[in-house]
Length: 94
Image (cartoon, rainbow, N blue to C red; front, side, top):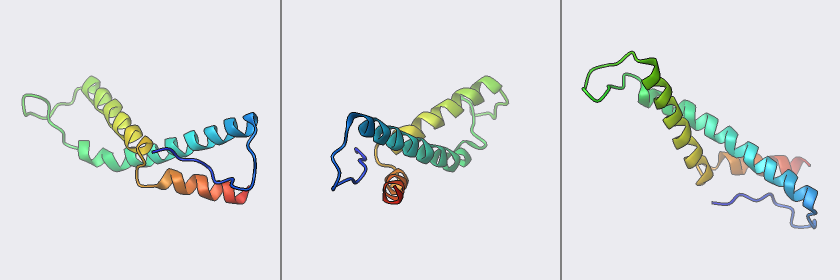
């Protein structure tokens, strides 16, 4: 899902388009961070392949990267609409 700032009365220049792109990217990153925090409890007490709890830091790191990737994908796909609301609010204020 593509998020675009609402500038219906203005003609965008190249610099404005780049600024808008950065705003959308920042809003999606913000939403992804929120979603990552929401997904963390799903990893708590996660077992390894053998069915036993594992205290391996490497497995924890990989699991964290996986959660981050899922959160980013959800946000880029539209997420909960948090990024869209952030973009809408920032464009209204400017």
